Every structure is written in C-alpha cells, then in structure tokens.
Length: 270
Image 1 (cartoon, rainbow, N blue to C red):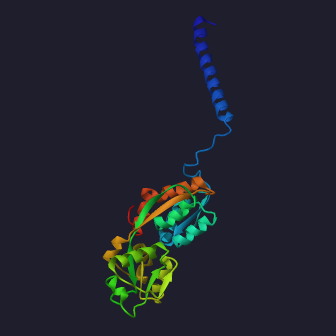
Image 2 (image 1 turned 90 degrees about the vertical axis):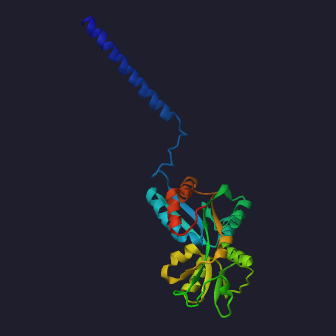
Image 3 (image 1 turned 120 degrees about the horizontal axis):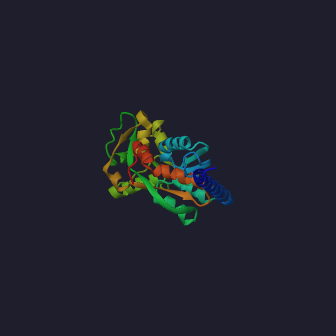
C-alpha cells in the first residue's frame, strides 16, 4: 500500500466511526427517556371525546365548529349539551362530566368559577345582542320594545335566570316598561319555538337565533338592546377528562377561523 493510499483511507475510517458514534448516541438518548411524550398539539395527534356544555344560542355555530374540529383532528369526537346557561352551570357544579363550558353571560360562568370547577380564567369569545322575533310578515306591526306591552299581544320571554331573560329584563327596566309574558321559557330556543309554532306573537331573543330561524320568523331591532349586550365566556373545566383536546377546541373557537363562523352567525366580536 502506498503512503498516499494510507493517508486517504484513514480520514474515511475516522469519519465513518464518528457517524456511527453519533447514531448510537442519538439512539441511546431517544430511548433512555421513558417519560417523553409525543406532541399532541399537532393536527392529527389528539384523541378522545370532548364534551362541551354550551348556551343554546351557540347551537348552530358550535355544531359547525365541532364538525371542523373532528375533521382537523381524526380520532376525536365533540359531543355537545346545549341549554340554558344557568341549568348547565348547575349540572357542572353538581358533578356532570364535561371538558368545556361556554356560557351566555359572565354571571352564569361565575357559578362555575366560584365552585372551583373551572381551570384557569374564562375568556370572552363573543358578544350577543337582543332582537324581537315576530311572526313572518310581522302581522302585529311590532316596531319597538314598547309595542310588546300592548294588550292582547302574546309575548314570550326567557326565564329571568337565563342570560337572554336577564338581558331582556335589563332592556325593559332601562326603558321603564313593564311586560307580562304569556310564558317564561328555559332557554332562548324554546322561546323562539313558541313564535315558530305560532303559539306566540313575539319573543325577545338573540339576533343570532333570529338569523338561524331563517324565514320562520321576522326580526325587529330595537335601540334598547344596546344596553343589554351579553358577553359570552368560555372555560376549560377543572376535571376535564380530555384536557389537551379540550384546549384545542377552545383554541379553535377563539381563532380567526372560529371567529369567522361566529360572526357569520351574527355574534359580535368580544
């Protein structure tokens, strides 16, 4: 073997040996830490069923976002329980298993936070404004909140403990108006249904619900609604069975994509 050949081969041998050592070190390092976990925040890495308790007025938009979430994260499932925020809060503090709570008012969210059932600080993600829902064509010629006080007119309100009912009462009080409805309903969808079924002439509901009902009702705006706009907070629950997936769903709701869906439904930006 010539001196030149020896000089050429030795560096190659050293390089090969160094590469083998690096590979061995890498394998040792990756295999020695048994506590290392995969990055579950990446799309497709989440799993489990996320249970979301949400105000009835969020039904359409949250259903859309739930479907998008499942598509973006194969292996996950989003299950919703929609209803009056006060009833949902009572269920959570009573021990009902859930991952996320989206309320139609800070007051009902406070029921959950005061009980120590929320993880972290709730965040307002949208706001909502009231509107009068009348029969198609508005045969009662309702054009103001005051018109609802006319004798013979069948008006439905949400229960005063429900955010939409509390907001309606706030608007009435600000106007100095007194209204005796034919019924108080447990959530905004139930109040709207009374008009859709022609069991009532009008109901004070959210603008988003009027929009969702399409041509089944007609919406009438009133200026007093500006004094009774509801903030909607969302929170991760303390004993959430699927924390990472729940956080990801909340992130979707608050993202530009989520806000676009909510704005399209008629919600106001926070």
